[in-house]
Image (cartoon, rainbow, N blue to C red; front, side):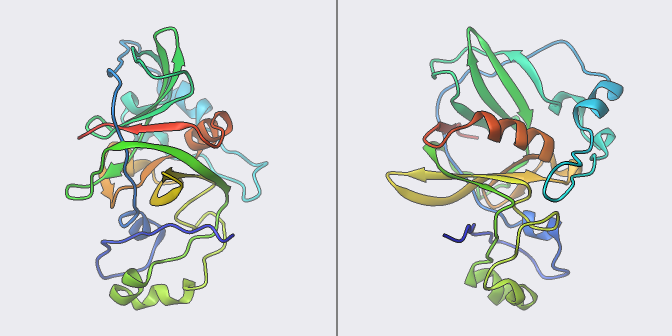
Length: 224
């Protein structure tokens, strides 16, 4: 089956990866007490963590991690939650995604989230997963941006594809919600509300989360 995601709310102008991201889609929600850590990763450490990934189907370059606030670097933090280990919790107010590890710990990732008016909260689960997935613009987007029509039958996976290297598709009651957690190559988007609901992690973070996340994993998106 062709992998798709609805991305809406784009303005006019050049059809670019960043403009696609400004119109992505997501949502979810519920429990989880935000964790914190007083340790700050150095830029040199972050550059190692977010290095290039040359062995990918489409080799991924290192992002300019200096453009990301250090508080959004991936790290293990104290995090008390009633959710089972493996649960993904999205905290849109603070631009974080947590993977509950148990014993009062979580892996925390910096994220971009939905902008005002596009925030959604609730419980969902990972219904399917995609590597270098095909992206298909919805008809509504093609109406607003006719230049997107060339991808009406699907944009192949690759570095310019809005879904990036990995995608987790969120479902409720057996139905695709149109919301995803996806890989972003735009470091400046982390810590901002730029999408129409979808949550983006830097590619290196998204691949880390993707590999640890089986289908049927619970996803909770907290109210903003």
